[in-house]
Length: 164
Image 1: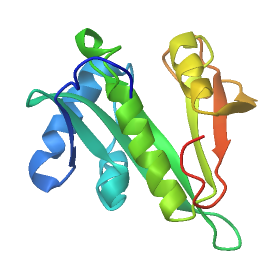
Image 2: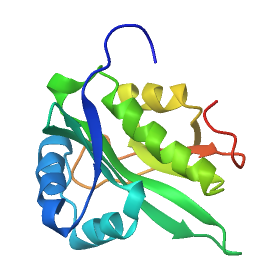
Image 3: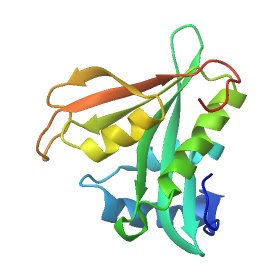
């Protein structure tokens, strides 16, 4: 990607034996608690859910859910993407997101989307760099956090286009 030495970042799948890593990360990273369905969806998504390791320390994750739309088309919902604060800015989130975008392209999945709290400018700007656009605003999406509103960010992927 740029100059400088490559950082020792590796991705690993989430399985029953390491799903606790994902639970621990989510507890630290997000203001909401995720239920069993979240973890079942994450495990069921296979390659679309990954843990990121920096020098063998688990520092981030992406967890997705595969959804069937009417007509049978598949789309990907990013349930969570997060990196521990001290490890941000090292390309870990980019690596995680690019992994999922590449999978979408290779598997001809035309749409990927997520919800972002309306005041989370860092996340909104991060996703916009990858071609995501705000496609909807949902009032009172969140309970117990302020502001309660979210944006839906969506990226439409043309088959096998790879990265833009």
